[in-house]
Length: 269
Image (cartoon, rainbow, N blue to C red; front, side, top):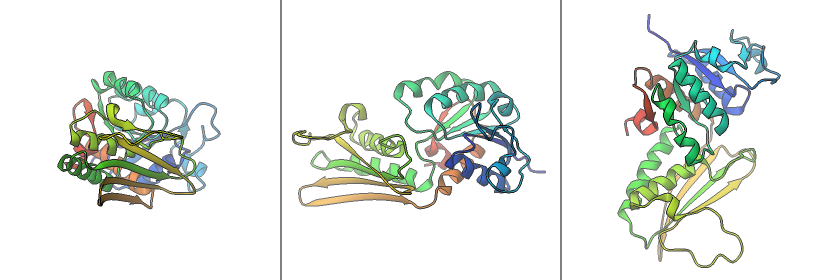
């Protein structure tokens, strides 16, 4: 019989949490063994399938993550930065692969993942889709090929409920552009314009965020020079692409040694 790793999904009641639960439950390569929510949440103690309005899945929502992680080979986590840091320590204690799709983490918070990565594999990405990760690689190559006569702008659009900006994907694209240029994004990022800002600084990488409706995710990288523009674009129309990518990462992580990885590693790019 082929081994099917057990998966725990954190933030079970959220949009991505529910999508992940459906994706794992429908998979023939893994099985759902846990669903985690915060203490006091109305789903705690209920079958997660019934809580989602469907048939029972035989998995009870818990507010005890370590107990759930101890039964799993991987944890898929699209929650909040503070929660992710807590889950990273617990996943490492359980020696479970920790797949992190949480966005809005600061550099300081990302650095705090390092102790956990000494004991278990952590796979973190601002976006889990194949298309976006190809776009990241293309952005790096185009930025490397063009000089600073081309201004770089990253434009992203998401649904009205998204709480962080720029998106994790936009920051991935900005990092790729900066790497292609051989500079640090922290030194050239322009993340806010309002009022009399003065002329655009040569070599800066700008970010613009749009929020509205039910937009799943749209990302453009604009290279603009006098007389011409190049636009690289990715449009997501179904949140399931992120869930499928996260499950692919969880499966790839089986057998990997402790350390920090990303989707470039998972996809062999």
